[in-house]
Amino acid sequence: MSDDKTVKIIFFGDIVGKPGRHAVRDFLAAHDYKNYFVIANVENASHGFGLTEKNYNELSEYGIDCMTSGNHIWDKRDIFNYIDNAPKLLRPINYPKTVIGKGSAIFDFNGLKIGVINILGRVFMNLMDSPWELIKTEIAQIKEITPIVIIDFHAEATAEKICFAKYCADLGCSAFFGTHTHVQTADESIINNMGYITDAGFCGAKDSVIGMDYQTSLNRFLTSMPERYEIADSTSLQINAVEVEINTDTGYAVAIKRIFSSSNEIEEEKSQ
Image (tube, rainbow, N blue to C red; front, side, top):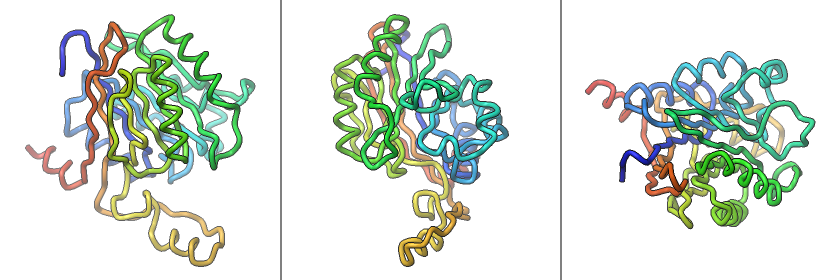
């Protein structure tokens, strides 16, 4: 569905290391997303953990309008030096208010204002401020400015994601993307006028363990020792993403589509 009163969003699941960055670069180059608002979760974009300033600038050049994150956002030390000068980058909003960076923002895009909130779950995660009352207040404040509100909920437990999504839908959210588990779920739907998916998946090495090298992952499970994770070295890359179309007057989602693409498919599309 498309008309003059809708805006299209594409959301890329967790970008994992250089393979993920290059997969997104090639995918965007192979498609016409000029009139889409492009969001990507980037907390694993720099060798699997955190985001360097160099990689922030690199991803910006690829055409990403907003970057969300999660529990690994602080894993590269230079984040503390540049996050307050990185207008596209969000850290989870339920860190204490004294923490640097911002957890939500309103972006200007093609004459529209688009609100984006990044927030962490609490089940099986480090204990954060409760997202429930916080999100209620934040959505209300954004909706005073724009009806378009998008959420990246970075969380482990499926039940928490589903319940929190329904709560956000009742509060008037436009689109809700679950992240963190790196496995794309097949439950994209529109819930109470809100586009929803439990997990958007990940972008990176297809032949891997959620983007990481199989052998080092296996060693950790076999020995229970804290062996350093390594990014998978694979010639086959994958894209996991979700497209949502939103009515600009109401903020209601009118269409949603889940995307899976492999590097072979991306190269074929670039050559056409």
